[in-house]
Image 1: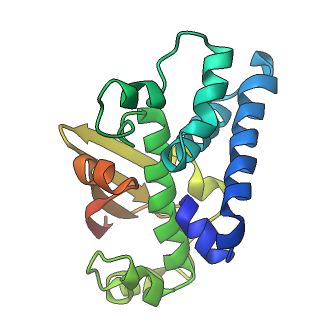
Image 2: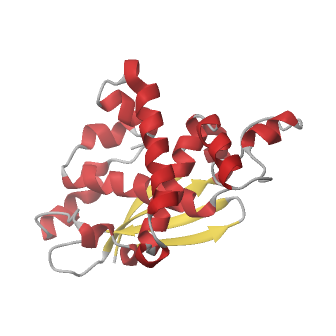
Image 3: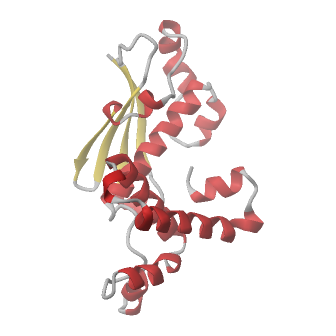
Length: 206
């Protein structure tokens, strides 16, 4: 979920400041206390994503800490002081943005697995999800959503100027991996919205 989705889902509007500070503390803990010998690519991905999530909501929670741990580093507050129009674009941190895109794609996989066509329709792609996935469910009884389904081997990104073409392969029970969700991510629109913006989403087979 995005931060706004989390607050809305759990009805935390009156406590969102506390939640944000908690997430900022979690980010700092991951950055400072995990020894290099225990760090993994997955953990680094999560750390970068969490830091960017907090920064996009309120960069001041991290700016002071960044200055203390890395004196001389330029922060978002510094950029604004020197005339920048806004905080850095959400796609500027490529590693964190890639995690955001993976999360957004997998959210659609989870909803498809639950056959929540109503929520998928509200996401605005204009796709008739139930009709598009009817042939899949005629062939397979379910869509996997476990660790293997979330694994990087089932997610591919092709980067183009201004756009990313992404493909999330569906984890079918037979392991055929012939079905996938594909989407085009508009970087400029994502930067303007402060969250992942899809130009189009499609279902592909074969």
